[in-house]
Length: 349
Length: 116
Picture 1 (tube, each protein chain N blue to C red):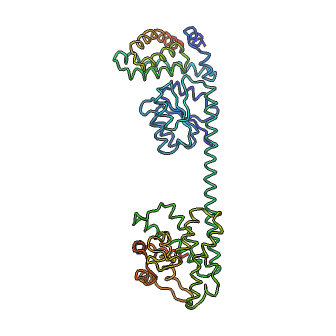
Picture 2 (cartoon, chains in turn brown, cyan; picture 1 turned 90 degrees about the vertical axis):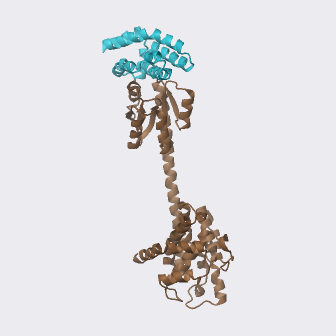
């Protein structure tokens, strides 16, 4: 528990009175100017409150407040301004920099001990609550991920090749998504969003649960009718996701839904199910599409042997697996070395 | 505690001060002992004579805080007025109060130095 009070005043007499008043309940730290105060704030993690004089040699109290704003500690440590009735403007500035209260000289020790004690108690509760909320958010996002993984495992049970496929799609999506957002500002997304997209990519084939075994695991080429059924895994996947949105993170749900439906769309509009053209297809669905095609090529399937890396790259670039966004292809090609390494890592595991 | 009794006669509110020092009279006496040096460091009169009113108000402000905390009541009242007058742009009135209070301050300092 934070149990130290930092007293910052250039006059020893003032520090001694405050120290005497608080020494039975708190560890006392003293600083005679702002510089020393900052040193103590940076090197002590148990400070529960700061009692701060404004006018001091070396560095004044305002600069200490600014420092606490810069490193965010002002939100967790209450700062009381010690003053013999400073100018109104100065006190207003101090409040605006996050000071919680003003202590007037001469000190009224009994009131002071109550006031400071109460605020320290409030801050302790607030800091504890923040920790609890943070912990719960972390737990919730773990639950989210494990649920997404559970759904993906279901597909694995139906379709023996998909378990490894799902892992590789995550890795590939991460690599290509990072490259495309770094190379093309129009596709920029913050890191946190990319992480959600990677999680969402796990579910791209969830609709395969609804495809009959005879078609899903058919060793030979699919007939036209069978292929039409197979194509439904995109829309059936969305049907499944709509049944579970309330238990999923809203953003991951949104990305999963879009990727499920559109990871077989193509840049020239010749994909399915909606025949979207160009950037009508979201950038994440475009990226998962390339990742999905690449992985299908380099993996052995019941109906074909695995292609090697160079052949797979060539086939994708030649448009043998449909047309892709040239920018996504550039990002994909630029990531070739990383993709090769990823492959090696997964094989070794 | 001769010092405390003697300071009473000079208008110092020692009862109030002792409450502030959590009735630790030893600490109060020790901090009174720091007062003469604090005054030497904060020579308001020199700043007045140099017409450096900005430093004068800062120094008077420091002494206001210290004299308040030690309950050196006559000095505290004087420095409170000096700070207010300087802020109100009335340096002459402020200097008059200073001139009036300096002998009292000397007496208090002499009393402290004699007893320590």
